[in-house]
Amino acid sequence: MHLNKFFEKMQKRKILSIYEKMGYQLLPNLGFTNVTNFCSNVCNTDNLGLRFNNKKENFQSIFDENKDSKKNEIIIVGGSTAMGMAASSDQNTLSSLLTSSSNFHFYNLAVRAYNGFQELLLAQSLVNKFNNLKKIFILSGVNDLYFFLDPNFSKRFPGPQVYGNKLYNIKKEHLNYFKRIKFYFEDTKKKEIKEQLSLKEIIERNLKLWSFFAKSQSVEIVFFLQPFYTWSLDIENRKTQKEKMNYGKSEIMDKLDDSHGLIKEIIKNACLKNNIEFKDLNEIKMDNEGIFVDRAHLNDKGFEKIANELIKFI
Image (cartoon, rainbow, N blue to C red; front, side):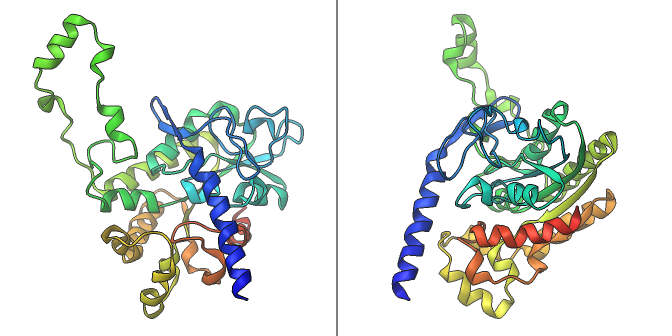
């Protein structure tokens, strides 16, 4: 029994090490994306850094996957959970599982560490790629909450994101001689945008924009509050079980553990205002011990469990 657990742990570590090697690429307007054209036996990305459902040798883009079958389309947006972080292969991600078990083709537009605004911008940037788009599944919530709980992220307009500081800084090497001199003497602090946004304001803005987009494309949207280990536990089990999770022990994580009600209320109310269907995936009955790799990420068994829930909303 102990030997089996040891091998399971080693296999999990091996899979996660592949994802850790992927890295990111800075990308204008969107901030960044998953590294492009990443190849491995665990995860493969296309020329935009988007994850394949099942990469073929001649595929350059995830949009090559549906050229022959021409199925009606559904997109999944979100962060690392939606992208399939910790899945043992591309075929075990939500988009791949749902494509295999339905009459729709699911495109995986999720990017690790994306906030809700980036999810929105990426989908709209690719609008010309869709021919038969019918629905949009948003599997999100944790990253926006995390960025507001972490004091290291600036809450300035248009909202906090990973690598934000790198995008705001001007590199003097890119300036000519006279502009470089001016750059040294300018009071850049006076030019900084001071406008601050709350978590509620950002989520309400994002979902309002999603609603506009959905109406313009005649598609439906479903927002799934993503599964998070401690959110699916009752209060008594939470204190004892969360210590088993290998996802860091910090003040921010403790706040995340206790913020399920807050983020759920904000998102649910924003969805109601914008006629977006809402489902909290933390309410479904889950075998927590067997499906979570850490607080935020699932194993193959977990993705299969969530896919079985998502397919009800097709």
